Length: 197
Image (cartoon, rainbow, N blue to C red):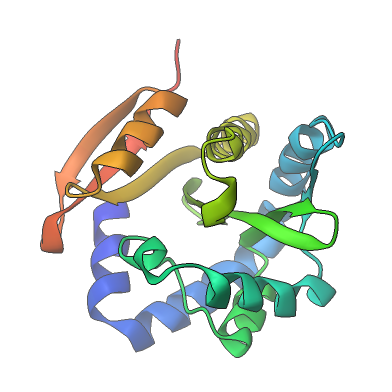
C-alpha cells in the first residue's frame, strides 16, 4: 500500500490531492487526537533554554514561507515534500493528517519538521534546518521526536531519500535503524524505520 501511495504522489497529482483530502477528513475523526498528544508530549519535554519547540500556528505560516524563501537553493535539491508558497502551506496546514512543527530562535523559524499520516496507520516524516543552524543536532532531535511520537500512537514510520544524498541518508541512519523497502524512480529509495523489539 505504501509503495502504491508513493507512486500516486509522484505520478498522479490531482488524484493524490483528492486522496489526501479524504484521508485528512477521516483521519481527523479516528487518529488525530492520539497522534497530536504523542507529539505534544515529546515536544513539550524539550528544553526551551535556547530554542522554542512547538506546533506551528496559523500565524506562523508566513514565517514558514519566508523560511523557505531564505534558504539556499541547494537545500531543496532533495527536500520537496510539498509546495512552498504561502497558499500551498496554508492548504497543508488545514489537513488534519499533516502535523507541522517548528523550532524557533525567538520569533525566527530555524527548523521545520512534519509528520504526514494515513488511515492505514503509516506515516512519513520530513525535516529541514536553516543553513546557519546545521550541525547543532536539531535535525536528529526532530527525527527522534517524529519517530517516537508515531510509534507511541501505533503508527509505522516511513521515509524517502535520494541515494545521491549521502548526507541525509547518514542522518536518517543516525536517528534509528532503517530498512530499505524499494528503489523508486529518480534514484530514490523508500525505507521504514525499524522499532527495536
